[in-house]
Image (cartoon, rainbow, N blue to C red; front, top):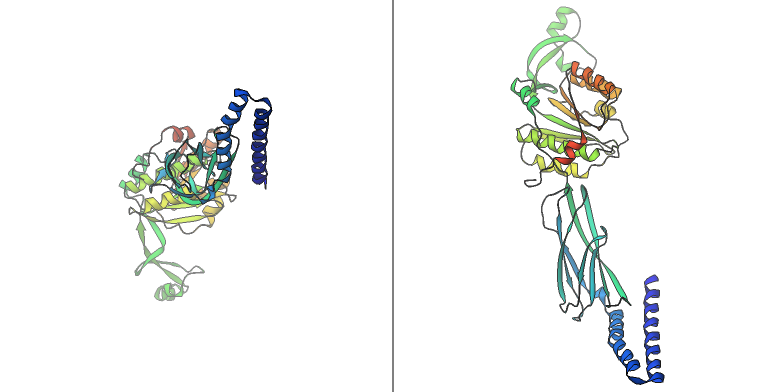
Length: 387
């Protein structure tokens, strides 16, 4: 309705201006008055032509080259336009409507097929580009006509990553400390010993001869398998440095995979997600895709997620990434550190004496704690060439 009102207002203005100039020429006479009228005539007729131009009959397509795009990289977007009439357009603008950018201008083009490429810089995440807007007008801006075209296109922007040092982890692997028992994968062929029966033990595990000798139920203990799986746990709570945490998660995962370590990812956010550990090349794209779509809107404390989640407890160790320390989190990490290797990375701008004392307590329990300044993850950027 608003566009129709503007169109009729422009049309009425043109007719009124033409009538005024014609009346002036008729009553005044002379070269100047008729010169003004005839000078206005082609521009006025062109404006009327723009008003009836069937812009909505144009055909618009958009293409984005297939590839992995990381935060901060330029994403080339190409728009191709097939116009309905081969008339010279004084002004034709092409706008990426969702991003309010990518404006291309064509002037006095006689071609019906036009093409233009611009660059977009998008934040991390999955972006759905929907609409391309075309606008035509006359040289003086008297009239203009716009049309929107639904041209859907999905672009995924992956997080950046840096080369992360793992000297301490390599020492653990060298000394065999990374191989931890897996309670849920037992070798049922060989019993390593017996122990007292605990409610919940399967009856098939009962050692009847030992039970008869001791006059109480005894349960077989089995040799436990070992593995080298590691889990990267990303805290999804709201944080001003959440993007830096995502960058660190990608960096840590890439470093472990490059060392041949099976890596999984647990995201403790609004929607909890788990990626099982794997070591082959397909794991890295899966981790990147999951990190591209996470957001810092989690409401559940990280300590509760660690206590409730069971998928990752068969791993040799876990790397916890968070921006805030708390007493419940430290208590939970002390429990985990008694069974497997724990590495805690805290990304924050401030590091108080209280936090330092909490970190020292976790180190005494067998964990490893490192405080990281967010500036380190903002200035030293790489990744994307082989992503």
